[in-house]
Image (cartoon, rainbow, N blue to C red; front, side):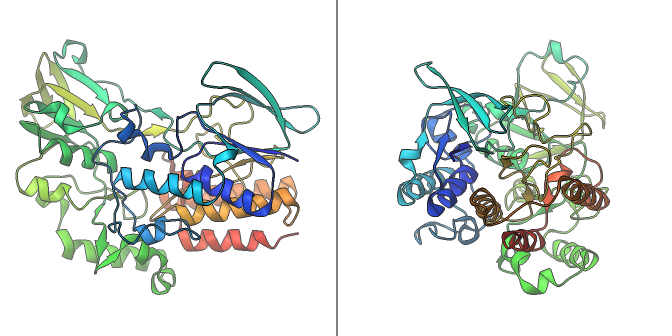
Amino acid sequence: MRLCVIGAGLSGLATAHALQTAGVDFVCLEQASDVGGLWRRPEAGERGPGYLSLHLNTAKNLTGYADYPMPASYPLYPRHDQIASYLRAFADWAGIRDRIELGTTVESVRQDAGGGWTVVSRDAEGTVSSRRFSHVVVASGHNSEPVMPALPRGADTFTGTIRHSLDYLDGREFAGQRVIVVGLGNSAVDIAADLSRHAELTVLSVRRGLHIMPKQLFGMALDQIADAAWWVSMSLSEQRRFIEQALLVARGKLRDHGLPEPDHPVFSSAVTISDEILSRIRHGAVTPKPSIDAIDGDKVSFTDGASVRADAIVYCTGYRMAFPFLQPGSSPIGEQGSVELYKRVVPPDLPGLFFVGLVRPVGSITRLVEAQARWITRLVTGDAVLPEEELMRKEIAAYLSSVAGQYGQREGASVQVNVAPYLQELREEYASR
């Protein structure tokens, strides 16, 4: 029995550690030149979803691995380079470095007639290898393909540059320029705040209101609140009422900052976490505007009738999950765009294939991927077993229905999880035989 892990970011390293601890033979394939996933890319100057101003949004004590805490010298919300250094140190401490093949791109993963999995990869020298494994764990992350919306009228006449946040690295590149940031997610508010320290003008163009939450409420990190017994004991309506009242105290109404109010209750869509963006708006460093209506040369007009001269537009419009190395029929993404996995890990009709990290919690993901990795290890070693395919499909349908009831049918909603209940589900799976 030999297993292949694809990816050596936070999720892949958690999986490798669990397998190593259990004595399972495996190899981890990572296309980058080092471990660390998106956290190492800004320092390396590589194209990717990370940028030089990137920090954790979750508390270090809940984001570090359970067996290897982050250094006491780290701040509560470490920088990207500190996280990258920590992940490298974890790989060394866990003794998994010699199991990781760096600079190796996975080109295809195919289930063979015998039930095993054939993985074709290409190393840094261009040598192609084809190897057979009993199991494959995909831990390659969410942020695969950038999503660009339909560009406004006249975009082809724009005299400046238009880019996705995937290609954004440092605000200093835009020193003295007039820049429009499109979006209101975590990347958008981070990038707008960063740009505002270098650009002549920073405009934040927002189509739809989102709930903006500070990293802490009542002196507690948000993921610490999500982990507290008193929070878990609340119903969803009680949690919403609590947070909405807390946000009114902490920052007032978003319309008072020139931003649209959300058209949905909190926890019915992904929230935006930022301590900076509202302060930058209040200080005049960032100017909020509605959607872009049209572009004419360097003139950008908004739906409220106002216009500005701009040198650059940065679209922070997110990513879609993609697994180009999987064969048709092996992707966890269904026809409706939902991720269809039993307990968010197992495709019911593809024995031996697992996914780690395809979840989006309010709070740290680390405990979740560690729990997923432990469960997968128990399945691989035979210490836990899966139910029949029909039962797995029923669980998936029930889960997607419940998620749709809370988050709607928006793309990406199917990966939303509530931390404490999900961890309990996985603990129950550990004991299954």
